[in-house]
Image (cartoon, rainbow, N blue to C red; front, side, top):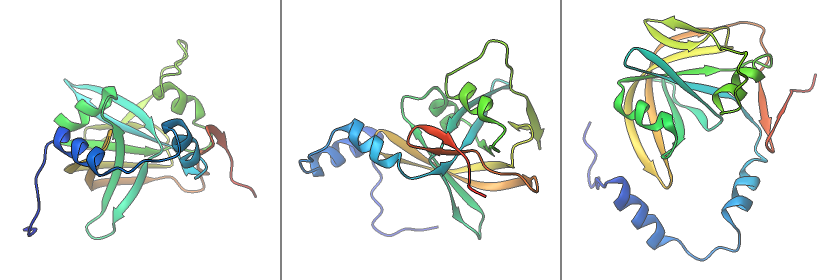
Length: 180
């Protein structure tokens, strides 16, 4: 694929460009985060594998990017422990959690219960969350700097889905459920 006039920049250069172009705003980072939290989302666990060990983190910044080819996109904080593992790997997994998997979401969001060990299952040798509504394995295609996050784009190579599950929903910093 050839893209004309594509400027390649490092993460540091990209952040400097964005800061230079930013105008004064009348809100704080916390206010912006709270405002964006008003957008209800599902909850996913992003998994990676490093030195044969599964690693995972909870996220809600996930979307399908394309149907043909099947692409998904996740946004990961540059300071997150999983960021480097995803960057260095050739693949990453996405598990879309169901409404009964709140404990799994909390675990991979850093709110661990010492008596709880989430279970992975493996699709094509790659770890995903057992019994998730949807399990996707991807091949990492692109990583785009986006301020203090990176957008990782993965080509879907494997897909498994459960029927008749309801999503785990996140809104305004809390879990919720779909009505009806």
